[in-house]
Length: 498
Image (cartoon, rainbow, N blue to C red; front, side, top):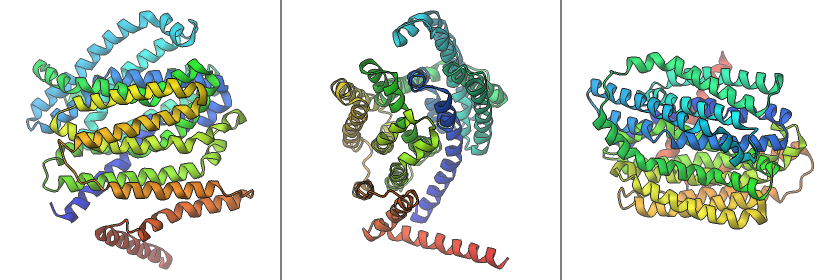
């Protein structure tokens, strides 16, 4: 594969990533989009309750899909027989439907116990019923969405999730702002939205299925995906278990502050990383055996880190303005202080994701589970030690330290299975320059809002140019940048003449 072919493939990856970014935003960032509504109609304590329930829903959704949707991608990508591929789709879909029925029959009878466990009373029992049902529909709905990814039908994907977004946004506004039923209304909206998505995609599932349950394929996929259960649980708890510990040692107000700061910082993770993963994973499986695969994965990591670091710098510089724009209630404003440090996990997670692909290639997912479990243990220990003293600052620092250790483990072990010369020096260079710019701006005491904003924007715009003078870009990259710039100038000139 020649360099220009690799760049073409990167463009294809970027195209699907952009489309899936919009779709992923629709699905993942409803809470972010609705922040002005939530912060206006929910107290800081209520928002803390929402933070606990939201994390619980995310954990359940990641664990109880048993990694089967991802396994479906892997097996379908390798299957050339269309009929067998449709059998795999039906096997995955019907398995998850059956498992979700068992899930609800097992969990709903204990709704009161869950409420007492999490909130010390049974007042939230109905919340857990709604939450369990919403989780079930979300998990089953993951099958058609992953099928869109497999078949690279990005337009269908974005249309479906955008329709769901509109419905869920409307229901949130109705339940939270009009009927004022608070946090319960948020989860009722999600339940209805997940049901709506399943109804819309039912014909698509039917079209791409044959009613043949392949038990041997199910066992193969389950064996492949079983370690992913622990991986998903470890990864999710690593990023979110600190909310439970914050609630235990402090109060719901502290949880609310951390949840808001984390949600704003998590925008970067969802927009860049999760959307990238959604569009890239099916392509990565097809790319492993290509002759220039190792250089491809190396450049992908560099470009991905560039996007995340650049976005993190922007969010960090304007964190106070973002929070004040999103939250009219001044009780929430202190959350802006922790946003810069909470953007770092997105970078570490990006590095871990690319490195972990080596284990998928070698079908050694057990290493993902081992590393994630080790990171979770380290994170839990640090949380118990630091959070009682340093509150949400301790939660943020413990997450970064544990994820950094995990990144080192991922690199050392993955290189034994799929050795790639990653451009680690460039990644360190990008991070260092961004950090220096942020610290320099933070020390400036500028009282004038417009002048301060202009200085921050200048620093943000300077970032890629500073990289140029630090010899960051390859020659082929500079050629492409010049071509893009020349084409842009031509477009502007044509518009002026018209």
